[in-house]
Image 1: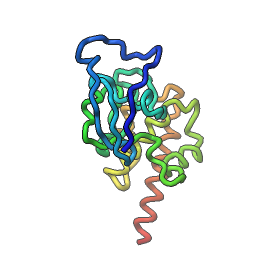
Image 2: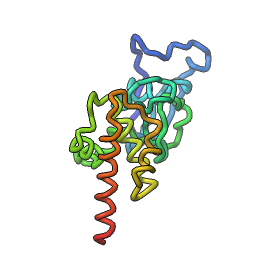
Image 3: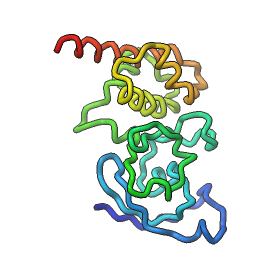
Image 4: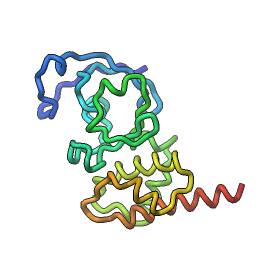
Length: 183
């Protein structure tokens, strides 16, 4: 088990100085398949914990109000905006970031399809879309384009690359359907 001591960083956005915020506690949870234990304020957001304590920067701080989806992670297999989840809420739970989706050096099929379709423009939103799509694929084996649109409705792409993003995810869903029929 990995145990980390809290880092102090200048410019951190967690500046509230209430007694509850200053009381660091050990939090134990599974991060990308490995159990970790970290000492952190329970009111710190999961987004900040992942970026500042674990150097996992795939989840992006966009709006930090749960509206844009750039910080999406899987919590017990379901997509959540990590900027709205407090560290104390992940105690004993499973957290999967975009970094945790690649297995044994293999690129996630969704990432591969996004590249093939030319869906990543600036790339800032892409990790959130990948994680949200992975959460969808876990729940719905062969999602339709309409289901994909609904599942990704919490993610914002300022470059306007939605159709290519949906095309890429539909492509992965289509591959899964072909594999399922071949069995």
